[in-house]
Image 1 (cartoon, rainbow, N blue to C red):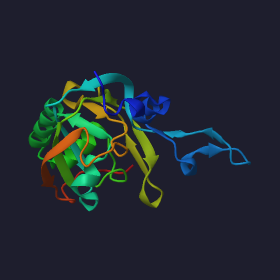
Image 2 (cartoon, rainbow, N blue to C red; image 1 turned 180 degrees about the vertical axis):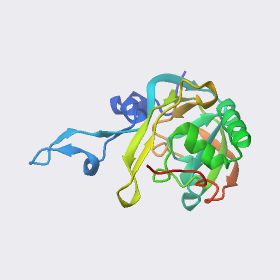
Image 3 (tube, rainbow, N blue to C red; image 1 turned 30 degrees about the vertical axis):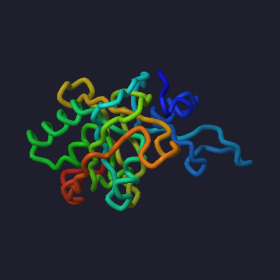
Image 4 (cartoon, rainbow, N blue to C red; image 1 turned 180 degrees about the horizontal axis):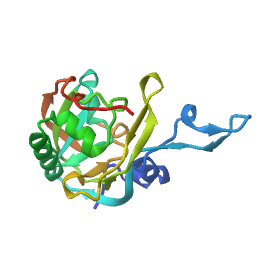
Length: 198
C-alpha cells in the first residue's frame, strides 16, 4: 500500500517529534559556539507506534480559529473518533468545555493551542501516523509560572490515544490525505475554564 506521507513518516526525526522533541534551535541547549548539545523535550507521546490510517476513517483535531479550517487541517496532532467520544464523555461527566477536556486528556496547555476550533475530517488517502498515550508536560508558562501537567494514563477514564501525522503541511494538493467534513467554533473561555498554573 502506498501512503501519501511515507517520506515524512520515514524521516528519523518524525518519531522524535511525536515524542515531544522541539527542533527549534532557539529552544535548544547550545555550547558557547552555538552548536546544539540537546533539543528541548516535553509533552508528546510515550512509546509511539506505527499506525495506518485508511480511507474512510474519521478523525478530529483542535486548533486556533485564527488559523481557519485549512490551517488547522495541516496540523500533525489528531485523535480517532472513538477517542474523541471518550473525550466528549469526559467533558460531560465533569461539566467542562470540550476544549478543556482536550487539555486535560491530551495534555495541551494554553500556550500550545487556543482550542477555539474543532474540525472533523475523513481520511481520503492512506496515511501513516505515530500513535501513543500523552506524556507529562513541564514547560514555562506566563509571568514566570510553570505549566506542569502529569499524565494519568494509569486511570482508564483519562487514558486517550493520540495520533501524530507527519508531513500534513508539506503534502501537495488542496486537501491531501484528509477532507474536512465539519468545523465547530469553540468558546475560548470554556477551553480555559478550570486550567490551573502551578
